[in-house]
Image (cartoon, rainbow, N blue to C red; front, top):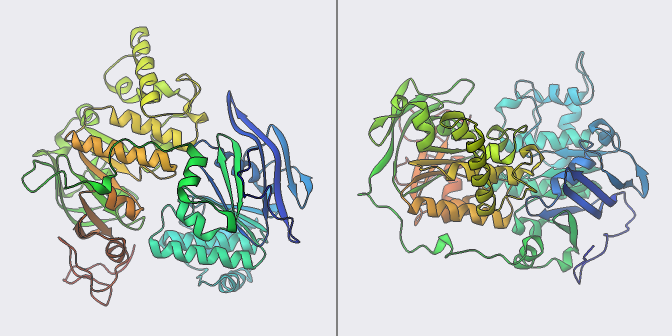
Length: 540
């Protein structure tokens, strides 16, 4: 283990409880995801876990959660070795994991979800609802046990999962990328909640790629690189962001200027229109409704899409990629109704990077098969000659997009989440695109990978492609976009030129704050409704 000068070795001995791993090793085929990890987490503190994609963070978490079992090494609680074979074992040992995507069942109520974890298949425990309310109050927030989960915001669902873990007497709560899909104000509330958990003698571990939030909100920090620990730090010795980047990925070499330094927008009003959406209302099956959507996207433009998750982003992506044809309104690609473009032609012209890479990759196929998936499905038979061609193309894409895989013949299912996302990006950006729909393309990516994605986006736009770029990271949207459209409750709340966009103005439009006006959007009145007769009744 390489401990950076000024860091502590394994954290404080302390008088509270400890959760430790020693010499932890885990292989997936020839890939060593964890390579002799030593780290200790203590009760009563907030501990940040950092590392680039493929560094071994998710594998470590899943071993502690009982999803995986280590090949060698020990897990210790209060210095005593324990065996964790499955998630129920982990819960019995007081370890709870709050995953990036909620594990709550949307169509059940809050109290029904909590009852399920407690093993309740019959009548509800009459005391459970009040215990939930009391737990939430103790942690500093309000909770309605009778609410259906599907009506809750992302932040509220996260708080329910934390309350559920606390109610089950979890002594260590591990959160995987907890701020990825939260609005700025919800992030502040989350870290306030984590501090309260620590004050209640809970050990809090959070995984993040956001260095600033790790520096500001953790008492200790551990950095992983390629499956090993490269540094432990107490709060007083936490290094700068630049030093953390160097520890995680080496010296960061980014070609070209920062996007924020671009002298002028890449497009203007005279640039050829690529996509026009006019008066679209309705929803795909099981989706949320869009209301009177009007948008124009020009060639060579990056149009950022901001909004709290669940306000129409998935539906907009389905509309733009042709996965959903609305009954009301129209969408045209260079003057041609998108519904009239044959599927085989559409797959060539439209790139789709979905927010969940699991839906865009096939576990049972190799890296080269996933990279060539579109062509094999539509245009080229899997002949020996074509197989050699696809494997060679995949090798080039692996180098170009820095996909960490032992071989193009390895299964995609064995890659880390970040590398799977790179496979999707490599496949989609290799097409001759008219438009790319990138839904949260840097979600779960480390600093270097995120910068590369932004650079690829810029280069694609400069080649004349229209890019729709959805993100929950408002600074990222400001950096990469020419204009930013804000979605709220299925409507366009405003369209901002990047010169007038700030985190505060975007965040206010996202959350329906008062007195905000944006280009192309209505003013939000003190009631929280838009001016006009067709204003929405509330957040969906």
